[in-house]
Length: 255
Ligand SMILES: [Zn+2]
Image 1 (cartoon, helix red, strand yellow):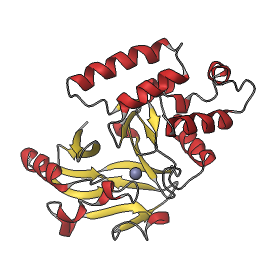
Image 2 (cartoon, protein in one colour; image 1 turned 135 degrees about the vertical axis):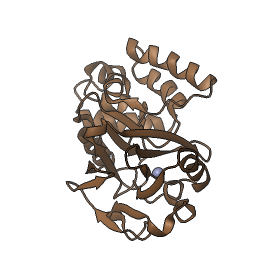
Image 3 (cartoon, rainbow, N blue to C red; image 1 turned 180 degrees about the horizontal axis):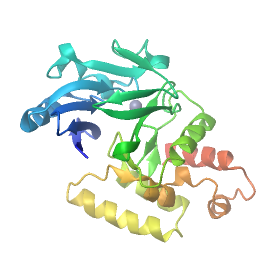
Image 4 (cartoon, rainbow, N blue to C red; image 1 turned 180 degrees about the vertical axis):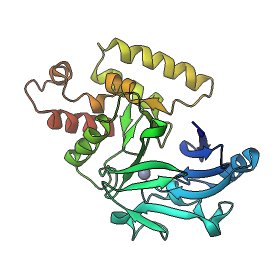
């Protein structure tokens, strides 16, 4: 397969993802926190940027757009539902749409919750989903605009993707998320070993993003609200998954 995905740390703890097609030497960027590190990576690889995929309107995902190399010819794709708050779009998309990115299909999934109109890009031929501030490594985005039920439903959609899907999320929050996750499910041995791996990676300055959907399902408390053990641990035996999710999100806000 000619595709390569490069993780680019930006600003303090953001990630942008550069997708390159080795055959055509063209590239697409997912979110633009800051142009400089992205332009440097493009120059280093000799790739031409053709497309920008925007997940949501927050400044730390879009503000670098106008300073990207090749900005004039760039096709900018973002959510129709968020078009009034995003930079001008070449193409506005929504849930159920499929677009072509460098010759590969990308399915649009509405993952509202963190913001209303937040979208994820699922690229099955790359085993990749770009989730930004919806599903995150060991966490999920804070609910600035949506309700817990909305985020729960968004995560259900992401959770139903194939297990081998790699999850490219928008921030390096995993160490804090890991400490929090341990308070929700202290008896989860897969989680405990992931916490060790996370600490070691962060001490070495290595990104913990992307991660695999398989690992998120096994360890991410926001994907595990259906677990009777978690409900028991929170004193919520018999509560619905969405009720447990709501409580877990509330506890994370106050962590
Ligand atoms: Zn955000």
